[in-house]
Image (cartoon, rainbow, N blue to C red; front, side, top):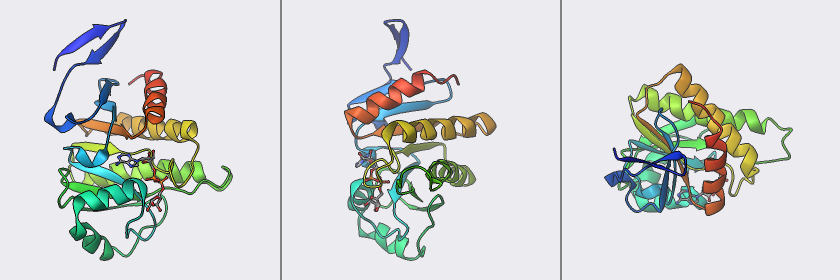
Length: 200
Ligand code: AR6
């Protein structure tokens, strides 16, 4: 990996095949936690995480994009799972995606913050990582769960995403790479800002 020190910080110049097509990549820390900007369906990782709903039968946003890119076999496999409660995760094959697996998790709908949303959102990250570890997966990419249609405030959701993932890796350092995949510039800027504050 080629690393350059630019403006006092280290920036990765690595251009892995699995990250081509992404507009920007920011190295975060030595535990392989990174933030990338782009479309999660293009990533060549062991698993992409889907921000699904409790039916697991598809929808809009990143769920729609993953189902579109994976093809109809993904929906067929999801039908057999019989849904998934909020905060839990289920795994399927990646089908036509480059990613070998899809981990479907269901984020909470934001209802003002007093309905257990924070615990449920943290549970999404934890249950997804647990499932990935059980399947011996080494690389995983997360979208910003619940921050789209489910309206979770971006800063609070990002804090939970980062805390959940870093806590997990401190206890079980089994992943080579954990990516936060941001679709919008606003999300990308937020993740970069909050991740810089985290010590591995
Ligand atoms: N790659 C990466 N991130 C994406 C992509 C993409 N291709 N497309 C959207 N995002 P959302 P939620 C980002 O609404 O809030 C669905 O209908 C998006 O910019 O996809 O958890 C489900 O079926 C945002 O930052 O998921 C559920 O009913 C993030 O993904 C419901 O929406 C999450 O936005 C789930 O809502």
